[in-house]
Every structure is written in structure tokens, then in C-alpha cells.
Image 1 (spheres, rainbow, N blue to C red):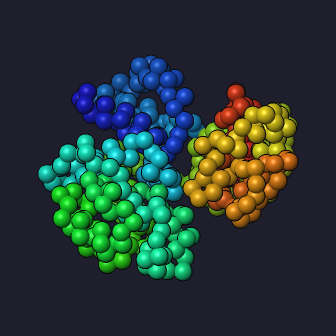
Image 2 (cartoon, helix red, strand yellow):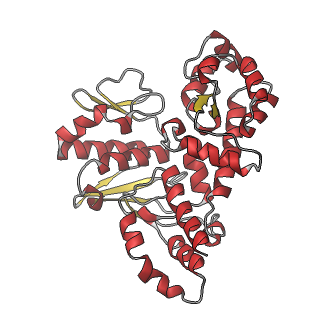
Image 3 (spheres, rainbow, N blue to C red):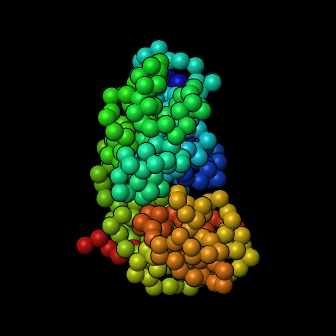
Length: 335
């Protein structure tokens, strides 16, 4: 029973790490756990803990499978500190004899630098595919031959994958061409395996298709805003009307620059705004698709999805002490 309880807690923590959720709110979650589980006296310990965590909302939500899929399919998994451990656990789940991962390293199937052969194989959109997918989980594996493989073509890499004792590499040898479709397909498989290793409580799984119809949120609340439109920002007691996620992010940035320009200028070199293929906040608009000038020598990339714009706004707010308590927003009601 203790092991099952720990499994629930580990799933909660791991899923939040995978979804890049803040950890600073978890102290209160676990500090109040003893008191919170008292309301479920008729359940076993693991079910009591699961029920408490399943009821968490906002900054301390227990990510369901859909949220894990959305976040993990888009994030830069190569920079995730625990990616090797994640792939090792997927390997162990296959029920095969597992080799030691101690001497293995993370390898990009599509390499970090494209040579002429890779550009030909990927086609006309080679650069676009590379920028979007090079660090995603579907393009990563583990190998002891990283230096030997380097920028080898996929055809050349397949031979080593075939000879590998690692199960998650064996399937790569059966693929004819490594392209965007195969990367997405492998990402989906890996994410499904991850969700089955670190499972969420049944109460969350059963409600995955529920639509969140709320219209008011604190800035740090975890919510999928795909298909939703913001209509108002409330910050430091004032309100700002907005009609798009670009307008939302722009206004957040401009307000924070006005509040403390020195802090905002420090974001130009901050790692959180490096982006997957280009900086989101920079001192030049070079390589930006839709730049917005925030101030002299500060530009903001506006070519972002709804969830990306919201998440970068959260990152900006997070850099200002206690500002997360001063910012909220409203969405237009679902029609």
C-alpha cells in the first residue's frame, strides 16, 4: 500500500515536471496532505492521496493525459534534465533485457546540424521541420555510438539501430525514411508509454473530455486555451481590453517593462526566452517572423500559438516578485 501511494505521488511530481509546471506551490500541497486526506476515511491510503491530488486546480493541478501530450509534444525535451531517465523507464517497460544506461548518451536521430543529405531527405521544408522537431522527444533516443553517428544519414544510422540491444532503437531500423510524419508518430508512442508509466488517478482520466468553461483565471492557472480568446487583463488593479493572444502577450510585456524596465531588459539574455528556434525576447528583430517593438532595443516575437503566448506571459510575470498575485485575465465565453 505504501508503494502504491508513492507511485501516485511520483506520477504527480513527474507529470508536473514533464509539463514544466512550477514547483514552488507544492510545499503547501504536501504540508496539508495529512489534513486533506481525512475527508476520505473510507478509502485506502493510496486512494485517499489520489483523491486529494486529483482535486487540485490551477497552479497545483494534477496534469491529465491530454495535458501531458500537449506539453510534451511541443517542449524542448533535449534540455529536460531527466530525459535520459525517462527513456530508460520506457525501455524497462518493454519487458526486455535492459542494458546499462550508465555509458549511454542522448542522440538526435535527425542531427542538430543538417548536412546536404539530410536536407534532401527532409525535402523542401527541411529547415522548418528541423527548427520545429530537432529537440522534440520523438527525435531523441539513447546510444553508445553518438560520436560515431554524428551527422550520418538515417540509412547509415539504421544499421547501428538494428544491431542495438536497446528495444526503443530496434523499431527505428524498420522505418524507411525519417521525416516529420515519423517523428510525430514516434513522439506519440513515447508519450503514450510515459503516460502509462506515470499514471494519473481514475478520477482525472474519466474527466479528460470535460471542457473547462470558466472565463476567469489567475495568470499562473494551468489551462488549455486552444480555441479560446482573451478579452481582458487585470493587472495591479487596472484593466486592459485585449482581443487576441498576441495582444495579450504584448500588453503583459509592455506593462511589465513600464513597471520595472531593468528587470525586463534582463530577459533579453534569459534562458527561458531562448525559444525552440529563435529568441522570443531579443535586442534585435532579426529572424523574427512577427516582431513587436516593446522599447528601444527590445523586440518581442509574436508568431506564437495561444498556449505559447500564455506560457511566455507567465514566464515574464514570474520574473517579477509577487506579481503573479496581481495579474489575472478573462476569456470570452464558449459559444
